Length: 173
Image 1 (cartoon, rainbow, N blue to C red):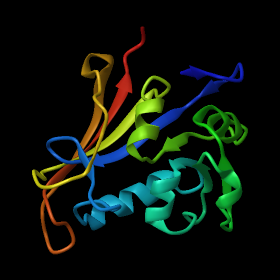
Image 2 (image 1 turned 135 degrees about the horizontal axis):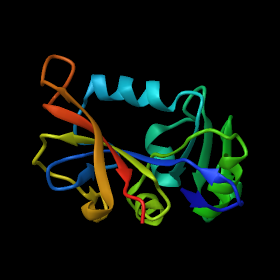
Image 3 (image 1 turned 90 degrees about the horizontal axis):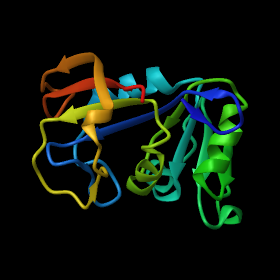
């Protein structure tokens, strides 16, 4: 557990990535997975979510029924209803921790990279996608993580690709 304010924090990274760690293309995800979006909503609703400004811009608005933290070097420029602009990840986690709820890191790549050491859980949608991307998930040291849950989904009229949602817990050091 990440210790920032003297209390235990549950920090979870949630991400969908392709077979070569692809997470984005032209400011959006390179696939549409309706079942994964429903799962993301179910998991994050009622919880604080932390994202970078580019991720926020790609979503276009605050995610409803969640406390939205947007990390930006210029917080005064993020003027959106139900959004808390902050200057760094530590500030976002500190403020999100006040809720006492599990904190979800939802992107993008630089925020994932900064938060990997802080996270104690990963929820990764592994997409059977091997195509183009311009944004990638940072390297994960898989020796630090163990699989605790796995759900498989098949390609159909709502999901562009086969995928599985895998939950990993950090192995205690």
